[in-house]
Length: 318
Image (cartoon, rainbow, N blue to C red; front, side, top):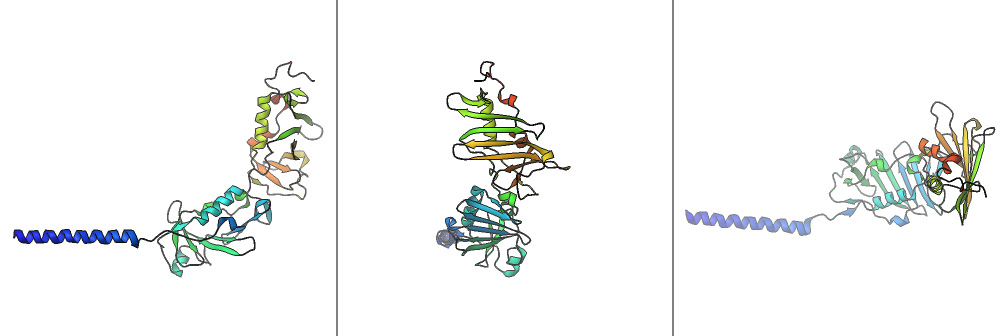
């Protein structure tokens, strides 16, 4: 009896060793290595086209940078946002497919006929670099995806909301921000009949002067920072051929600026109607943009705000 138990024990140990050897063998050489869902060089991408079946957005790269086109409008795109998306697509790794059939492609909405996003990448010659589809989501931060060059469907680290379908979502929100090396700011507040104006000038010896009097430097730097960090919300729904031809009844004022290398002007006004909002147009850009109330309120400070903290002797005209 004891001999039989010893034999069975030896056999059990032998079986465990065999199982361990097989498992280790599979772990070392049988596992599927991660692959790229699509293979292309991010630096070669000059056009990224997104479609959801009803509308499309085109992102194109030229000498001026990335541009976004949607609804027959073309504007400057957020280059960092576009580059990050191109890199993310190039780095999508896959391992085990969740399905491989055409029926599954329809069900997961990654077929050429049924998809939530169709993503095409091209180089500057128009040649296609990659084409893929994204569809339903298997979980938070994941989406089913398929390369047009294969039948396999994978769950990848991506979400359809990261591939938005509006011009505003890809817009360069800093499109109206003023440059760093400002030399002069001329502000007009109000419309004709109630117009008030003042001027800031950067003097090498005395700092910023307000109508030739020494200004509160802290207040001025705060104001300049607001202009240099100005961010828009999106493109105004109504665009005019001449963006400077604003509704005079709603004109709030303008900021004309000069830097060491360029000059320009921003015009601030409000849109008529119940849903009044702040709008800003830029001289020479032919575009009108929406800005938040906080941004609009900070663009045209009173002259007194920039004199706060300045002593009587400092405020004397030169």
